[in-house]
Length: 315
Length: 283
Image (cartoon, rainbow over the protein chains, first blue to last red):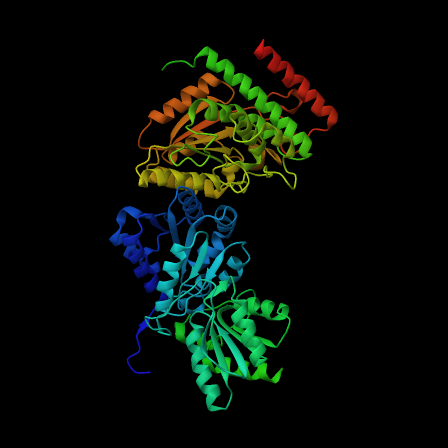
């Protein structure tokens, strides 16, 4: 893994907003006093007239975003995942989701990898919360290439979108030729014995797990599930039917996120197979360096390997 | 300032009385709903739609129309009655309120009802959306204005004050908020439940232009909205002292009529009173 480029998806978000600003004068970006951290500061610098700081008032920001959307703007509202999906949940549900307005929520600092700030800021519930809102698209990109593509796709899509970005810089999974499509899962490595569905920063771990498993003679199919809603049932069910066992990996609670979505799809798909979920195991995070925390909470390749063997044993 | 023309004032009174009939009729047929707070704010709604706002019932999504957000969404029967009178949809729809095949949801929804500019009902949220609309006008160099009505109980919601701080900080002088100051909420008087008073001082402290009026005087309503339109640099709030249940004698100032429908006998009595008021106005 020589000369690996590492970029946080939040950086790609900021850059993509600037890119969008140049081609779409209806794009307006809102933030809640976190522009430097969410990287919307890049847009603020490029297009100060179309950047509005809401101050530390996320509930109002979501309502303002809704009002702007009714007036014909494509609005990106940004803050940390904890406050976007958590604090302002009901505003997102009632003021954005219910009227199905063209608001894109750019939620950064999702998951355990927030690191030192600790559990109060480590939102591991956002996918679950956003996924139950009717009509809400939920995207969790795996790297900077996919994050950029997701932002552009979200802008082109009419309706509410929740995008989940991380603080931690991670390696690239895709190259520049990658074509992102909302609602499309991507088979990154074909395999025969077990399907590993991963999302966000766990995708790189899934790829690493694939190599470890291969060395042990186990063939794993790796699927990148960036869009958790709408879920690409077709790709996932086809793979599950082929391998007969599924593992999910996400930097999110094992309750309500990718694991739940995949389990629901597989159970209802007509050919149920074992589904084993890896995620934050119904617990709060804590302070510490991000990479260390990911290992402490079991979010790494070794644990994906263990879950894969568990899933195969359940066949 | 010129006083409201006598002919226009009489027409407004007639429209408002017809809207009151629409409110009790729709809530009676729905067998649920919120007549008290609908009757308290319906004069202001009537004024806005018939005398003040630039809207077109034939083109409800007209790009540069003035916007209205019913932040106290439970007063939907008042909004629907006025929208129907204005011609956004047939008056016959009013009796379908809250029914499963109706275009009239229990609380306003932009997805169901022509003329509704924002889905509301969860208190405290409408004023934020109104701020967004007003900001949108500023960003786009548009001259349209935005109006919202809040309940005096509603302003107990923290989000209202996030929005109040924001509207003033961003200089949204194209926004006018109305506080329907009827003094009552579900659990009792606002003063007993969790006093929001004094209201005027709070908005002044948040940097708003504050105007205090009687919610049932068209002269005062007209003067207030004209003054708000001329005020530059800050948003305006009209604190409109009202009578909950106004126009139906047994509902007036009664907490119990916040959120219940009249039975057949009560409905007949309400209609008798309102029909008599209308006949007197039209005489």
